[in-house]
Image (cartoon, rainbow, N blue to C red):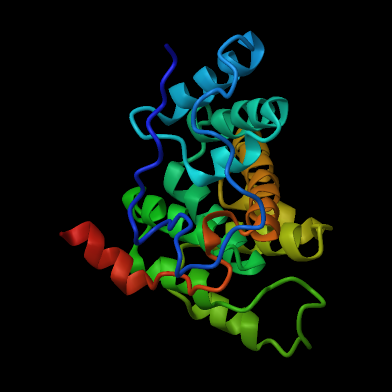
Length: 235
């Protein structure tokens, strides 16, 4: 018999529905295949569970599994980005966190900010990612202050180049030639640039699903502070 444990998630990261919390806009799909005789769907559940193992399925999985084929493709694409890339994991997580900030995806930030810290991003660097205004042209009346803030920040040159790239990809879609050339200038290979680009694009997709469906009932909450996240890692 196919059995997947129901989600048992840390309250500080995700909160499933209860009588006092905001309800997600859709109910969660079953945490086990609803029809054991439906072999294709059961195989999809198995593949997703294998990627999450030893953790249970998460709220995002249980949202996407309303459409098993979509959940399967999603699992394959994001699984490749997370487990089959050569780009530095901390740098990729920093980029994902920046996407979360720009799209106000609380769920995404709360999930990936701890991973960024575990990947080697310093608390002071993550704080810049959390608070720096968008660098994308058109997001503000350019007066040089945001650029000055970036240059004086604790970010490394590689991180600065990545944050600028994320901002333009996320906010205006069109990336300036100078922004792209900075990625090469700080030493990213062609493969790393492709992996960064697909990672940023992929997690822009993730954030839009999370926010539109209010997965995990996080839209009316605050992003966890970097200070609290650092304290959690020190415990």
